[in-house]
Length: 259
Image (cartoon, rainbow, N blue to C red; front, top):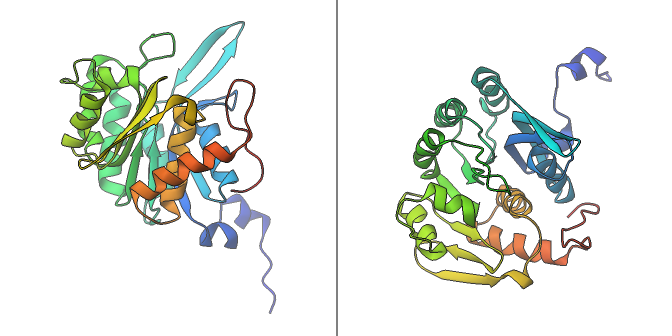
């Protein structure tokens, strides 16, 4: 007997066969209407790498007349999204980006502790590009223990010195501090180079040899990790994959087709 899928079943979000068999990742972060950062970027990278992605939105932002507007979602709304995507799903990788308030950090931390047993990739977002603060000092304090669960932390240089307490202006010292706090791998990104530290070996990748924003790299590492393999292999793959992509005049990768 043929089985006919009803419109009602599709409305309830029943997964199709392709998404059930593909590697999968859940991304948690801000929804940027431009599509160039945050959750929309993560979803674009996942599509290009043929990975199924679900998303949890922590804030919505858009730019009008040169000014960025932000609406921060209540912690309960964020927690409900996490429950929906992670309860009993067996999702292997979760990418955590912008958590805009201390209350959101606490809610996400608690939900991940209860609902998620896979590998966490963190891309902490503490400062805007112009130096304006996104997450206050109390939020940063609450964020530090969460990073100890990370399989990989991928972070901009400026955010690193907000998060670390003993770095003293050194990217290498910051990476080592985060590994001491429990992260398995840390990549600190600066204009000069990427510094990768796993507790045993330090690697530097010159800035002119790499492409893509920190968000691009974090999404690519998460998707590769979801497909299997070690954290170190996922980082190596992500660097190579981004380097092979065509790029815009500003040096950002152009996503074309599936990875």
